[in-house]
Length: 349
Image 1 (cartoon, rainbow, N blue to C red):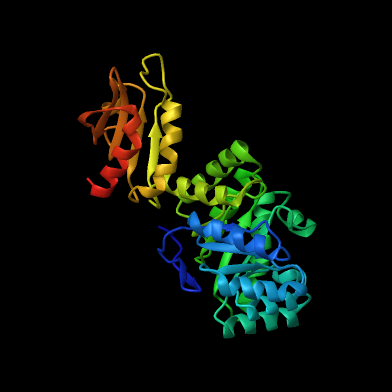
Image 2: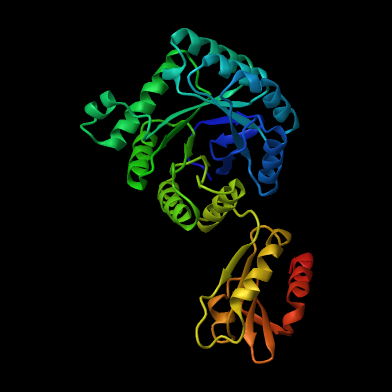
């Protein structure tokens, strides 16, 4: 559960104030590719994405953004830069949240118009900074400490919104450095009780990005900071959402879907664990939320090491040993593996 005292509602999606930590992503398909953007959005929804950010760089895409909002089963957050009129159009198009940098919207008058429209339409504003948006003055005042400069950048934006009397806010401070992101978020959270969006920006591709994001987000969340998150990867956006839920599950914060554990195998293995894992993974969405499923290589460590699993299999001399919370249920042939597990799931034993 999130630790921020304040909460906001994005089209009915509660963020902060003890709500579950929300998992989000951002469309890589531009709005100009209308069909592709919609298909990507629906793929994200199918893997559990709760909030999707959409780049809105030009007013020519207004109609497409409006259409996407009208068909989206989850709230959309428009990503706005440099032109306050784009923020106004995004709100008109039905976006329930916008992401802005108040300092680059063209002056205080433009910001006032955006705040007024957001207030009238019950729209949430996310503000924040990343390591690429920190300026030389902020670095100088922070004596070159980039984490403190990030804090200064966020607080300068926050002050502008609070001066306008607007408090339906989410704060964000991101860096490609785990340590900078951790320090900045903990510093900000010690002084502000607004909801926080967290992420490690430009984490990279594949395994490299997954490890970096998991370390950084895990450290921040373990300190009670973070109300929404994005695992920013160079790759398929659905993987970001799946990684987000896996991370939250590992920390005991969300239990969407089933968890799969498997042994690294050794010379005692009696079954091809990797092959069984590949067969198991497509079944996970069909299993009850919060379940733990184990695939172990032998009967020696299977029921014992995975005794907490709701259901598990371990290699045996005659096929597979089926067990439930450490108690053997009997042996099953390899070919009936999927059928038996799905049957147990239907029984919710």
